[in-house]
Image (tube, rainbow, N blue to C red; front, side, top):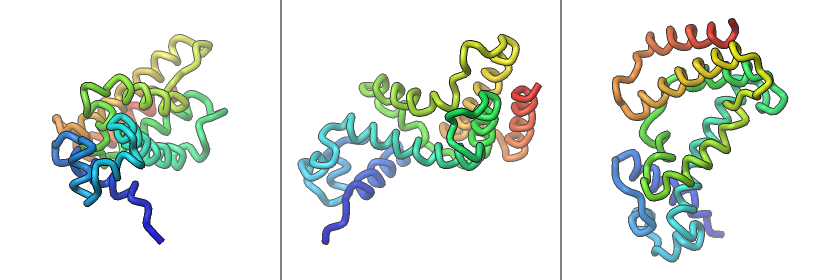
Length: 176
């Protein structure tokens, strides 16, 4: 019985991203000991591979978000969803692979579209939310976005102590 090569293909692609290298079907095939057509059997295009990487990152993120919320986002109040996102995003543990949606300039539009679609249930605040609450929730969300992004990009990342203070500050915005 053959093992499914998709996890190894994704791991090789993530490794290349983590090392700051460009991902290509050829480079991934070489890394896992397959031919390019062998990789293309599972991921017919580079875009398909990159979208699978985005989905892999967001699957992990959603697990963390659900754990913090205690349920799926459907039916949860906007403040509860944003609060879970604040906890997740300001928890630490992000790296360059979390930036996968922005890793390929030629595919950025489709990758960020997938990213936005997958995170919308967590981040979108309905139009009928009062303007002051909407502004506070947006501010908390953008603060959380900056926290994980700074860590993933390794650009002046917040210290663990800073993350704790930012998380508390953002939660105050969410519940005011």
